[in-house]
Image 1 (cartoon, helix red, strand yellow):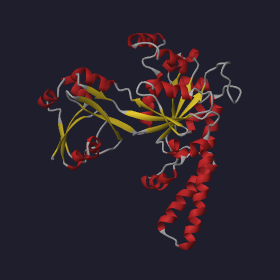
Image 2 (cartoon, rainbow, N blue to C red; image 1 turned 135 degrees about the horizontal axis):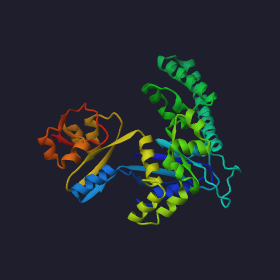
Image 3 (cartoon, helix red, strand yellow; image 1 turned 90 degrees about the vertical axis):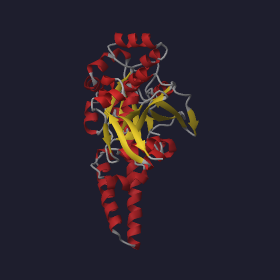
Image 4 (cartoon, rainbow, N blue to C red; image 1 turned 90 degrees about the horizontal axis):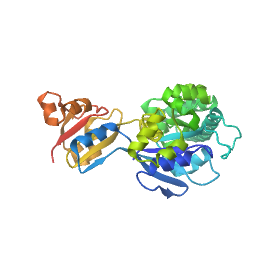
Length: 362
């Protein structure tokens, strides 16, 4: 399961967005201080395939979101303490940019750039404590026995400490796969991928249609985004609440009136999925159409294992056709007739949108 944790200051709209994003699937469950909910990843390609096949079921990709539910707690120390955040694959920071006198901001004035930097500073400070403790541990270990692995780890820890002391999040460092593996056990917060969700005022919704740059400039977040090794998506929670109470066609018309092509919630969910570094491939048929989530760069045999370990063990070949070719021809048989179905081996790197039928020996 892909896991993204929502973070943010009180009164940012974080919990409202969490409830809206996860209500469509199931009521959030709680685990200690954390609310947990599942969001379906919007994908028009799966919808189109489902319209073609009319299967008994269709299963989209999903993302698990977590949200701290204990009032009065926010910031990096909470993220360190709460297991649901430590185990998150990515962080989604909801930043308040809406103006509402009835909902006072704990920091006084509305200042998205201040809030984004304040949370960043907390993540960096929390990681600095972890890194300093690890430095001390390595120093003690080296007194007993010096090894090349300890030397490599110490060099990495020194680089991390230098970056953190300069106010740079670890996600901005250029790390090798070996470096990432060495750091993985520490659950460093500033090393996790981060996406800002700018919760804007309904009077500023036109900025969304104009593009993120417009939103970033209006909210003062452009400088932060330029150096934080992250990106952002804008949403108006107040409008999303209204959309949630409207049926399909009317909701689409409402969005069109605002100059938007899709719900902000859909953009947030899809942006979180992308942030996690995942793509989707599809399996289709009369029984089920399904989107399968795999990391970028996954080879065909490992992708087959997402469906079932027996398919990976008995892997023979993958029959692969691109989504565009499949939609144009209408059936796998027609794609075969036009030479658009490729037979790929276990080392094939699966691409986003591939439609695959795996051949395997039982």
